[in-house]
Image (cartoon, rainbow, N blue to C red):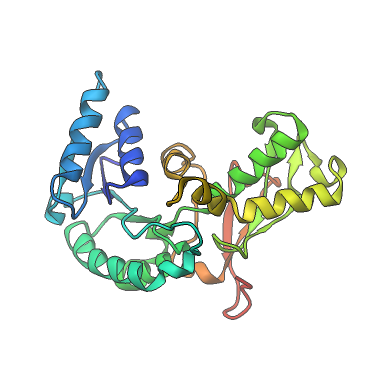
Length: 273
């Protein structure tokens, strides 16, 4: 169990994650943002909302106050807006990651980095290169969110509980992500035996564009609450792979990646993202 967690970025995802970490008494939380007063206000608001809070929740504009963190979750970056792809954020968010990683690693050299910033796979790889950390200590959070979306859509179509569904998706966090219905099951039965192919195709397309659908409704970046929930709750799932993220694939174990997933390297140039 981590003793200290630094959450970088006090936007929707960062604030929601800080709330859940504090609410479930998982770790001491330091919430950082560059906007003066924002992380302090969010931390105070959360602290007052949780009457039984007995772990410190601290907001700051100073990266030095994240020192000695066990885990650092990076949510900072420009959000997607309606009509934007994740790749549209590449240049701006790469500069943000570049400004954050060196001082964060300097102050917490033993930390594990979890990247949430979009475009997820590229930012994870960039964070690893900047950090100088071993690959097993840099990872991204997205695969479980894609699988959760597929599970939800399948459950809705079949009229069953998501608890009965194991869903498998491959590839990057974006439009090229590939849901695999033949390896997605309901109580062990492949969904290809339960739904017609045209209906499955609709659900697969909706899964690929799951973030865009929410953004179209909200007119800004989505998935704050789902992302934070998966980051703190599903600790058996390691999320997006570390350093070589563009060249990695999930490996199914018991055909149930919604409960556990493993990733193994593919040769460079054969990832198919």
